[in-house]
Image (cartoon, rainbow, N blue to C red; front, side, top):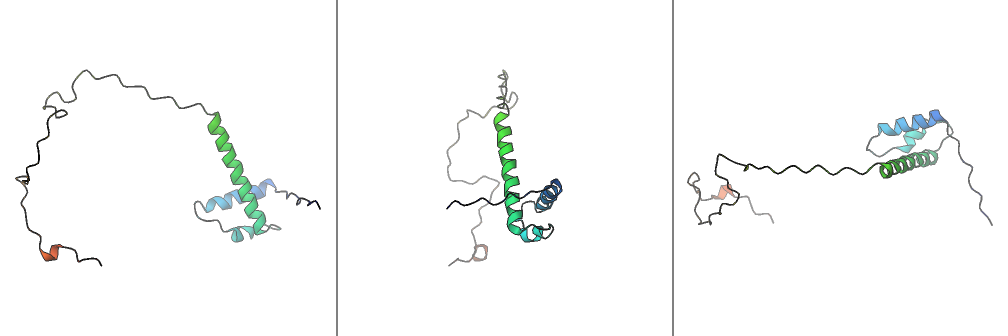
Length: 124
């Protein structure tokens, strides 16, 4: 037995404009289709949800199509090499050897042994 397709519902431009406006008010929150359906006469929650999905999918297809048709982005122009060294006045530290750590603190720092009230209690 062959199943017949449901009759296509006809939406007016005013209904679609109202639906887009109401759904856009929700922004990134979940749309409450029950509340939205109360604004329309002779439209069920299922009708509203289906029309929202159709409109959303159509917009996504259009965006994808525009992205494919857009020209590829141009690569950035390479900067010409700078003939001057990056730091002419102070000595450049780019290739300077790093001194080995000898276990001493910087002279400006003073070591203070931790006390019990400084430590956090153990988390069990």
